[in-house]
Amino acid sequence: MALFLSSFTNKIDKKGRVSIPAPFRTVLSAQSFQGIVLFRSLSRPVLEGCGLDRLNRLSEQLENGEFIPNAGHDYNAMMFAEARMLSFDAEGRISIPEDLLAYIGAPEQITFVGRGPTFEIWAPAEFDQDHEQKRQSLMQRSPV
Image 1 (cartoon, rainbow, N blue to C red):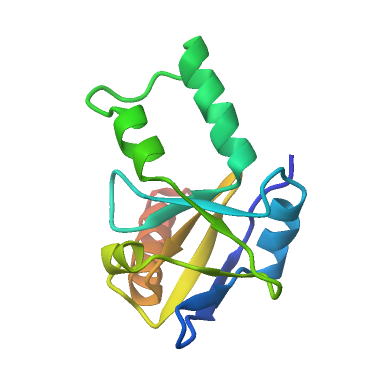
Image 2: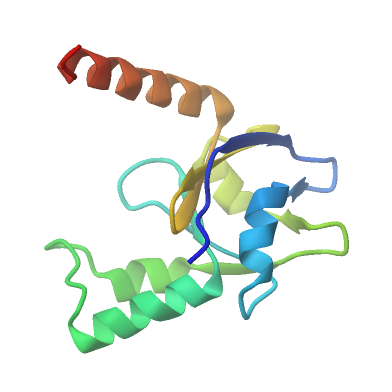
């Protein structure tokens, strides 16, 4: 399975379109749907993303009882109901709906963050701050 790796910051153009990073497009182009699936995170103001194939596998795991969500999270009502399928245009861009951009603070740029089989979309300043806090925390806990 191909993974989403690294972080990329891209500008949103005047028409609300953003280019998907080339390494992410490579992963997604091998899947059944030529685009991405986005939904609001249940735990913080970021967008979570994946290919449709990943969402299909998660649905099967939920149906078969192989994946049990945390208590209190109704994934069917939240994630699947709110998921947006966004197709690539001819230049590999997508248009992120305004309500999803508003959820992350309606930035003029967004940061794509690889998380292995999935990715996240952040407002750049929030990602930088969160990433640095996590790095500092890990450095303090790690033996030298």
